[in-house]
Amino acid sequence: MNNNSWKNTVFLVSAIVISILVVLGAVVPKKFGDVAGKLFDFTTINFGWFYLLAVLILIIFLVGLAISKYGAIRLGGEKERPEFSFFTWIGMLFSAGFGAGLVFWGVAEPMSHFFTPPTHGTTPQTEEAARLAMGYSFFHWGVSQWSVFAIVGLVIGFLQFRRQKDGLVSTALEPVTGDKPAVKKTIDSLAVIATVMGIATSIGLGVLQMNGGLNVVFGMKNSVAVQMIIIIVIFIAYMLSSSTGLEKGIKYLSNLNLGLAIVLLLFVFFTGPTVFILESFTLGLGDYLTNFVQYSLRLQPYRGGTWVRDWTIFYWAWAIAWSPYVGAFVARVSRGRTIREYIIGVMIIPPLIACIWIATFGGTGLWNDLTNGTNIAGAVNADLTKALFETYEYLPFKTILSILSILLIFTFLVTSADSATYILASMTMFGSLNPPQYAKVVWGVLMSAIAAVLLYAGGLEALQTASLIAALPFTIILMLLMFAIGKLLAKEPLPIRKADLRRFRRLEEAANKAQETGKKEKKKNK
Image (cartoon, rainbow, N blue to C red; front, top):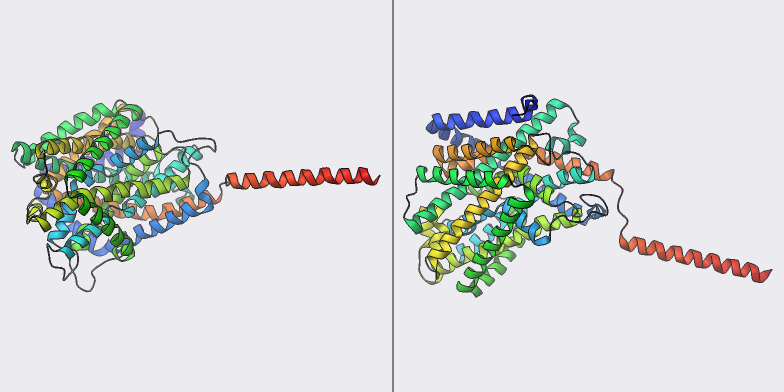
């Protein structure tokens, strides 16, 4: 290890904190799980309102920025153009952002809401419950999650490629917090810890679902032992991939992920209830847009209950927890794009893909329960990890679909973890775009270790708690990032638009023509 690493406070502090959590979770898993549960309740009860308000404010800010005069500014030089093709760019966004999570929740969430409706008074497993389930699922996977990723990526990308500075969160906040070393190191350490917890949640969810799929297809037991083996295999795969760099391993895997996801999506779309899927997508999108503000600010102070805390607040916290990683990665692959193109691309296209996915897979499950009298919702309520595979039971080639889905989850996890090792190594190596391999190895080991410990200590509940707690301090940082990018853009010269350039040239030609006419008139008068 390089001697400079021992002088790197961010690397040491964040690595030590994560290591302590790993040891505690391994040595006293029951107490670790109990404490996690209490912290979950404390955070959601007292700060749920803060998560909801923060995310809505971010959306309003980013939409305003996209349509403003600053939208034409590029994340790079004025003559710079995007580094990656549109398809590859979207593939990277989708894989790094939430691919594995969407495969997990794409059926599990709508079927869960169908079985236990989000609102009081709605009869479970009815048409009304199905409609509500689809609308809320669209909401949870829509622009709200991606606004969190977008703000982090925007500030980091602007500084890296426009101002040629490092991609650290602390550097992005300098316009607001200043450049005091102690403050910068604290911010970067919080960002690293939040990122590790967020990616550990995604790895844990994917591992649970892979175990559920292996149970359905090959009869393997749902057990901690099987989950640990899966984590080890994923660890080996993403460390091999990370050694090839961004241009090879991550790029190729991202394209494979998106291609495989499209194949599965099209197959289920055409072999499933196609018209029902199209209608539920259209209606769900309408309900999402109509109720967006109400869903965004929904709490239960008068009636009580935990639904909003268990779903909406968890999702927002999960997104916030790993926004340093996703934001930094999105920035890295978005070089050369304008701010307007970046915001529209990041906040519209991946959420639209997510809604189509949910309508196709979740809609197929809902249709079977409503039309054919199946009980997929009941099976999902008993075991969330089998949701996707239970739906395949009523489609042709169910075994092939299940195996392809297990492969898709695996490649999504490898891509996410691969990207995360790169970003974490960069964050703890002074923002380097080419961090040393040993740093990737350290964070690769710690990510897998904390995911394993959380699964061992409490499964899904422990994973949710980890994201929620890590996100709380970083939510404040997100709010400050809005002010930071505002200050940065206010000092930035605006690019000349083509329309303005054409207008200027016409005025110049008119002035030259008038000047020539004036000269001719003078000569004539003489």
